[in-house]
Image (cartoon, rainbow, N blue to C red; front, side):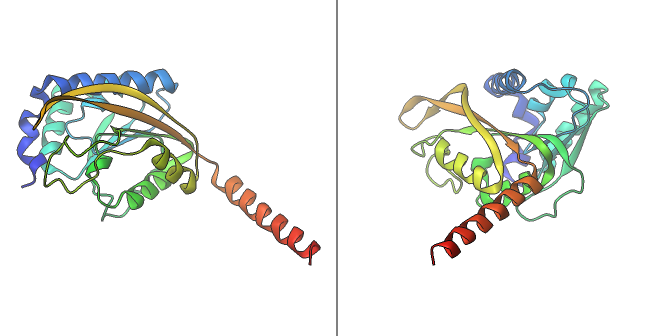
Amino acid sequence: MTYFDLMAKEWDSVPRRIERARAVAKAIKTSIHLSPSMKAFEYGCGTGLLSFELQPYLGHITLADSSLGMLAVLEEKIKSRGIQNMAPLRLDLSIDPLPQERYHLLYTLMTLHHIPDTDRVLRGFYTLLASQGYLCIADLDKEDGSFHGAGFDGHNGFDRDELGDRLTRLGFRNTRFTTCYQMTKEVETGVKTFPLFLMIAEKDIGQSSISNQQSATKNRKSKHAETN
C-alpha cells in the first residue's frame, strides 16, 4: 500500500484540502469559460475534491489516479451523491499507455511535484488535449524543501519561468500564471506559508504549429543559400 492508499479514507477530513480545492476551482472558473459541452480530465484526482467543485459546470469528467485507495473513496462519493458525469480511472501516466479519448480541459492539483519524470507526463497532457484545449496545473512555487521535508524524492515546487518555457517547447501557447492559494503548514522550523500557482496554457493547433516551424526552416535555408 502507498501513502495515498493509507490516507484515502481520512483525506477529506483536513479542512485546508477542501479550502484549497475550492480556491483552485474558483481560479479556473474565473480564467476559463467552462461549459457542459466540455469533456474534462483530472490527473492525480485523489478523492475528487477539485472535480466535485467543477462538476456542475462541465460535461463528462474522467478522474485519473494511480492510488486504488483514493479511487475507492472517490467511487463511493460519486455513487452516494448520484452524480452521472464523473468516472474514475486507474492510470499512471509515468508508465501506462495514454487513453484514446481527447479532452477540452485537463487539470491537476498538487500532483506534478510528486512525479519524477515530469517531461513524460507533460507530453502526455499535450497529447490528451484536443486542439485549443486548456491545461491547468496548480502546484507549489519553488521552495526550500521544507514543505515535505527530508527524504522526499519529488520536486520542491517549480520555477514559473522554467515550467512555462518547457510547456512552450512542447507546443503550448498563451501560458500564464497566477497565485491561486496560500497554504499554511507546520514544518520543522515552525509555521510556514507556501504559495500555490495556477498555470493555464492552451494547446496550439498542431498542424499550424508544425507548418510554421517548417516554413521558418525553409526561410532560414533560403536566406542561407542567398548568402553563399
